[in-house]
Amino acid sequence: MTPEAQMHKQLLYLPQSTISPHDLFYAASEDEVFKCSTAIGRRFIRQRRADEIGECLIYTDASCYRNGREDAVGECIIACEPTLLSPRRPDDNTSFMDVARQEKATLPSQTVFGPKRFARPKSSRAKLYAAILAVEARPWDREGWKTIVIAIDMEYVVIGITTLVWKWKKNGWRKSNGKPVANIDLWKRLIASIEDLQASGVAVKFWKVSRVKGN
Image 1 (cartoon, rainbow, N blue to C red):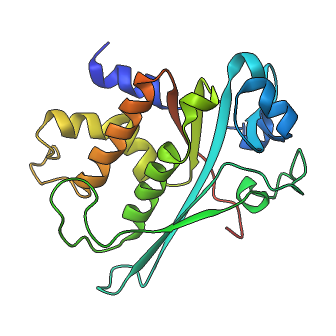
Image 2 (cartoon, one colour; image 1 turned 90 degrees about the vertical axis):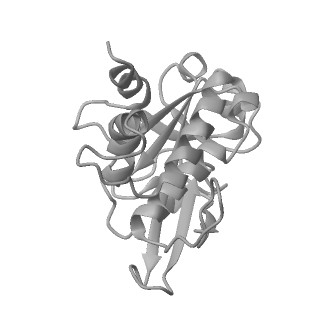
């Protein structure tokens, strides 16, 4: 198995195509979470053998107002903590994002890894930055999780981090056509954050999910 294929296998969360987050995860109570980890508060965890599997789901979303313009503003959201009033099993048509405490951040208008320079906010950058925020949101290793699963609705991020980025990195951060890769600073930051978490014993998985109407 090539190094690229190995990273693909390590990072891609690939249940059957008919499986949704609602089928595998639920909004656990604080007592249930405490059996799996040292986390403070509720989490979205696996429904069966939660203490053995040790998986925690983090939802992400992002948008970019005035996308493509100089004055664009990107907003990133992560959701890993169900609210106190959240039902254990949200309705299938309700995104976990809607029953969780939404942690929001503005996409920086400068590069976030390496020399500082202007980086125009775009939807792709916002989604990618949201993935970074999810990996870095908590001390997942100290909470005791074995795996964090990042749910995101953009193929650019999921295919990028599980497949393409490792080819780009090997090729000097250039695509197969020789053109430079966009958002190199964010890709490097995401890789570094993943590797730090893996070194502490926590696996990171990315799951391409469908966008729920209303989000």
